[in-house]
Length: 122
Image 1 (cartoon, rainbow, N blue to C red):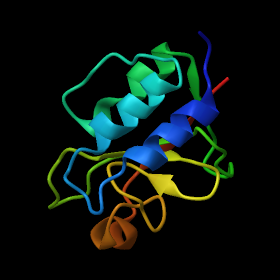
Image 2 (spheres, rainbow, N blue to C red; image 1 turned 30 degrees about the horizontal axis):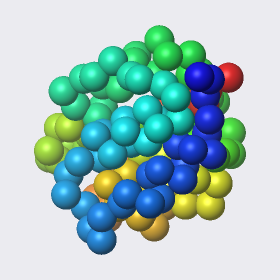
Image 3 (cartoon, one colour; image 1 turned 180 degrees about the horizontal axis):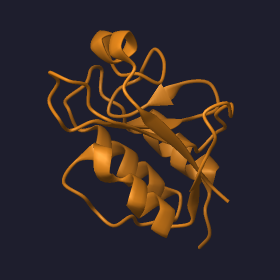
């Protein structure tokens, strides 16, 4: 089975919670699996970049507009929990374990804008 970004995006949209439960990596990883790719698991969301690269995703330039099935790995901000964040774009909205208002999962991320990389399966 190849990569099915529609199945991945459909999965994440249908399985979100009303609010975050700090399970962004688990929900995003499961959506990627629903799209046909099993990632190597890591302990923290911030560390999934290498797993995505090994699965055939590529890191995109910062100026690239997101597309359906893209995954963002956001590094933690100073004073935060240290886990970072992992989220998927469905073509309109970013999702993790909840529907996000933008790529950043909360106000501190929006304010401090820690480093991130968006990955796309080629």
